Image (cartoon, rainbow, N blue to C red; front, top):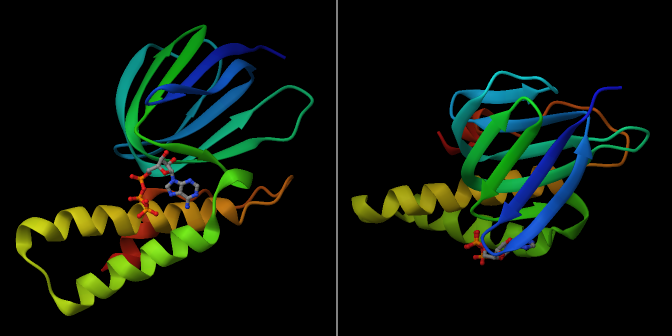
Length: 152
Ligand code: ATP
């Protein structure tokens, strides 16, 4: 099976580096599926899920809170603001932050703070979704569109 290189970093640390068969990532306009020999592209990433497919291994799932992705035919580079693998997500922490953000939004806050709190809410909802991933489960991905409906 054809492979490509994935270099996936978050701020100052490497999240994943290796050969992969496919990558799915939350592009600005929806989930993107990248296979080897993909046409070059550069995109902003929204808060959402990155799925890494490897040959002969279970997929890996990551929650990202935004960033950039560069695609070349033989390499994908992801620069994420933050990234956590599904089994490394502290669901209690995400739930506490989600509840704080939801409470602030329900109370009514200053307009300039609202966007930041809405973004936090999106990050936590994505973390909670991705932390619920189980090995070998191929359900719908946790993308920004999933979080949008919960915020409205
Ligand atoms: P919190 O209020 O819980 O800190 P946050 O959304 O403000 O949440 P971020 O600024 O997005 O946190 O992330 C700060 C650092 O903590 C990053 O390294 C991120 O990967 C990590 N992190 C945030 N939330 C979690 C979580 N629920 N489980 C594991 N790591 C997390």
